[in-house]
Amino acid sequence: MKEYPIYIGGKSRKSSSGKTFETINPATGKALAKFQEGTRKDATSAIKAAEIGFKKWSNVPAPKRGDILFNVAVILKKRKKELAKLLVMEMGKVLPEALGDVQEAIDVFEYMAGEGRRLFGHTTTSELSEKFCMTIRRPLGVVGLITPWNFPFAIPAWKLSAALICGNGIVFKPSSDTPLCAITLVEILYEAGVPRDVVNFVTGPGATVGDEIIQSNKVFGISFTGSVPTGEYILKNAGIKKVGLELGGKNGIIVMDDADLDLAVDGIIWGGYGTTGQRCTAASRVIVHTKVKKQLEKKLIARIKKLRLGSGLDPKTDVGPLINQSTLEKTHSYTKIGLSEGAKLLCGGKYGQRTGFFYQPTLFTNVKKNMRIAREEIFGPTVVIIEISNIDEAIKTMNDVDYGLSSSIYTQNIKNSFKAIEDIETGITYVNSSTIGAEVHLPFGGIKKTGNTREGGIHGIDEFSEIKTVYVDYSGTLQRAQIDNK
Image (cartoon, rainbow, N blue to C red):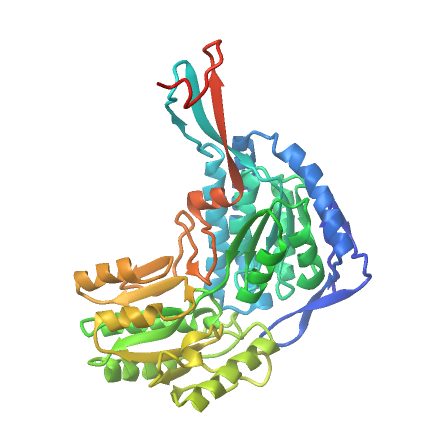
C-alpha cells in the first residue's frame, strides 16, 4: 500500500510522529493508501515555511499569479475523468457527481485566475483640495485552510484559488477521510507552477494539526468548512485573526398547492438523496401544503423505491455509500429517533449492502417542526415531510431552525415566490429548483449557525484579502481633514 508524505517548505517528508493512518474506500471498507499522522510540530514547521513562501508569492504580480491558476484549470480539465474516479473511490459519490465536483474546481480556478486582472479597490473624492483617495487590496499573510470530505476537490479549490490569487501563503489541512484527493490537488498546483513553499500540506488530526493552525499568532486567516461545534471552537480559540466559517444547514423545500409536483419531486430526490444527503445544502425538510401532501408522498415513494444503492463507479448506481462507519451509525440513530418521536416511516430506514457504508434512502412523514429529525443536521439520506396550510406558515416553519444556508420554494404564484425570497432566513433561495446548485461566480454561505462568511465570486476575494485605504496629499502643505474643511 502506498504511503504519502506531507509537504513542508517545498519538500516531502514523514510526520514527526512516525505514525500513519489509512484512507478508506467507503463502498468496500478497504484501505486505499496510508497518510502521515501530523503533529503540532509539523504544523508549526508548515506555518514557518508558508511565511517564507508568502513573502515571495505576494510580490508576484497578480496577473502572473492568475496565469498559474489558469494552468491549474488546464491540468484539471485534462485529468477530469481520472480525478473523478479517484474521488468516487475515496469519497463514494456517484461518478456523474464526482465529475461535477472536479468541474467545480475547474470553474473556480478559471474564475479566480481572472480576478488577477481585477482585485478591485475603489477611488473616491477627498474633502480637501489637491488630495487623492483610494483603496487597494492586500493579502492577509499566512492563512490556514481546513476542509471537509464531502467535496474533496471543489471545496479546497474554492479556498485555495481565492487565497492564492490574493497572494497569501497557505497551510492546508484536509479531512482525514479524503487526503488522497487533497494531496492530488496539491501536486497539481505544484505542477502548474505554484511555488512549493507557498502551499504547505499537512494531514493529521484536527486536535493537533488543526488546533496549532487555529491558535498560531503567525496565521492571519482561517477558512473552515465543517461542523458547528468545531466552528464555535475556532471562534473561541483563534485569537485576533480573520475567520471564515461555513458550518452546514437544515435546508427546506416548500411545496405549495399550485406547484408542479413532478418538478418538485425531481428537486426533492436530487436535494435529499444526491451525494447520499452528504451536502451542507441537502434538502432534508419538505414543507408541503396540506392539499397536495398525499399526492406528493405517493410520487416520492414511487421514485425513492427505484433508487439503486451501490458503487459510484457503476453507471446503474443512483446512491453511493456514506463516508464512514460512524456516519452510517449516526444516520441510523436518527431513524430510531424519528420513530420514537412519533414520525411515520414511509420507506427506507435500514442499512444497505453488507459491505461498505450504505444506508437506504429514508422518508418520514407526519413530522412536527419541533422534532429532532426536523431540526438537527443528519448529513445522510433522510428526508422529512412537514405539513403546512399557507405560505406564512411555510416560511415560519422554514425559519424555525438554527441554520440558515439554502432554501427552495415550488410555486406558480409570483407573490409566493417573492415573499419567500424576502422573508426566508437563508443565504440562498431557489425558486422552482432544488436547494443544490451553487455557481462559482456567485456568493455561497448562510446566516445564523450556518456561519459568517461568503465564498465564491468577489466575496471569495474579500475572505482572503484586506482593504488598505490610501491618501495622497500633493498640496505641499499640511492639510487636516475635518479641521481645515470649512
